[in-house]
Image (cartoon, rainbow, N blue to C red; front, side):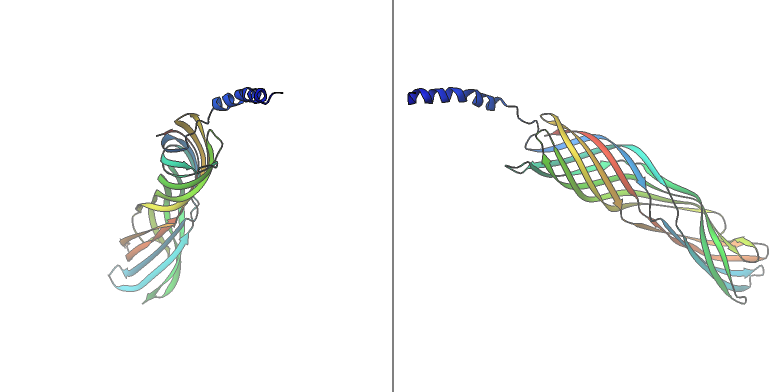
Length: 288
């Protein structure tokens, strides 16, 4: 065959492939982007490491105001608050960048989850053991009775750097980072009892204590994105978050009078614990 004719034939035979290559659809995912999104999450929380430490110190007087002894007692309780679940709104803002010439993607996102979970236990007994010394001496036992104790996780922010792998219309990714959570703890109706010659409500009327703290923690996230339009994508992800331990203190002075004895003193202690939350979130996002 004539060399010129062979060249023409090869060129014409290659044209369909060239046209086909030019017309091949590209992935909907932009190579780089800044995004914002909103959606919802299912949350499942537990409340481990709860610890209430209580102590009481008192001066004991007769009805004639004669100081007969000083007493002290202390002990711990470890409430079991169970678990809780919720459905909550989620917001997120972030960016991603493609590594040129590879399917790898990196980025970071900042998210907010209005979690809204809580755990509680009714009628918590905080055992007390101690003694008294003075004109009279001895040992005694008793209990703090706490009508209820509850802990709630209300708001959670997370900053998560991530690394992903693109498949054209989205990417799978994983990451980890710090969290900041609003945790509220409530001690409701605390009374201190002492077993002496009979049971005395030493600390007087029930008292309650509450504390709200912003608590640092950490989260691990795994997810997948899918672009259903050039600038729109869905983000489905699972996260597990654990807070650091937050410790709060309580104290209450009392002066409790009975027909034959009077107790003056201080009822005090600490309460602490952590909150762990796992979330399955789905958001719709727009890439700018």
